[in-house]
Length: 221
Image (cartoon, rainbow, N blue to C red; front, side, top):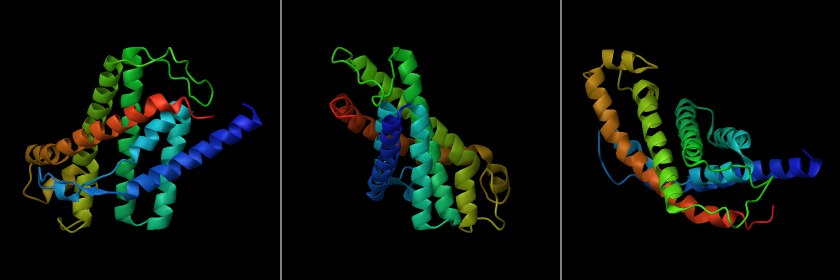
């Protein structure tokens, strides 16, 4: 990789991480109290920058954008438990969106050479089936991974940290042993609390990105 291209790559990583941080500052309180944990949720569109990074930089550098975003955000907010847990959730959400994007490209057989290396021709246009595939894969990946993460680790850990249990616990099994929840009832509470939110977030982020995506190839790289 040439020195000039490598410099562009670093600039794009830093710029997209910064854009993702800025977008994350504009949070919308979740307006549907769908379950007992829904009041904790805030909707933001920081993942749009992650999707832009995927098509402009590729998978490896997009991971660097995610890591840099978390490190900078924690540096400003402080490396305290609730911030670390919150950024862990954000990182897993970003990685699940990256996985959903990857799955859609494989299902639809779409070439994903980063725009920084090769800008596609005007003939390489996405059709509505491609858009549907990306929307479904990203939304389903986000929803499923967030259910798994919040069920096994993050929700039990956060509730335990905020005093809902006598002892701090790092997993669901320790949490249900100290509460009135069973594994089945806690799983149901997690599903109804987070699934509507993650479906709305996945669709919203994807719609915004799909409006931007066709125009990215006209940017001077």
